[in-house]
Image 1 (cartoon, helix red, strand yellow):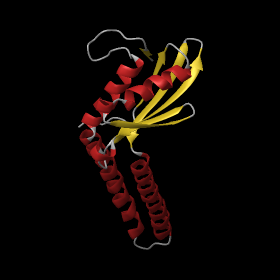
Image 2 (image 1 turned 90 degrees about the vertical axis):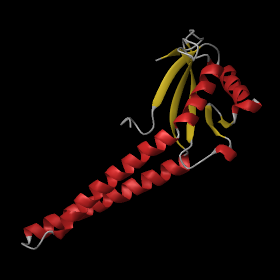
Image 3 (image 1 turned 45 degrees about the horizontal axis):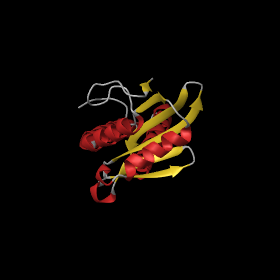
Image 4 (image 1 turned 180 degrees about the vertical axis):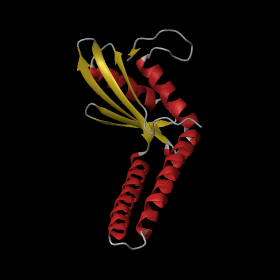
Length: 174
């Protein structure tokens, strides 16, 4: 199990205008065999798998297109669907809050000479944070095939360097 970032990021430069690149991505997603859906909001594109194939662990790719002197810069973020990401963020914030309160309670109990049972929440919260991180890694492993599908779609649409056949494409990864 890889212990990498929960939401990996990438950046690449592709020739052409922002509108052309967004149109290329939208056209690639619209093909019937892509099994993906997209949503375009200005210079932002969100791509995920179709509802029939979607699971709790299914990935979502968020792309931000911006103009530069070299062409179009594409900033990408691959991670869980925003609903799942929000749940994970809420759970982690709740656990961290409990750890902070437990630490404060335990230190006050220690300063008053009482049994510092509040410090047990620090240990319990740390275990829960580790479990949350491991759950994200398990979800990432379950989502690996769909993540590869989304990346292949982007490589095909944008002509990213290092495509599946080893040929150099139109884009350059940064």
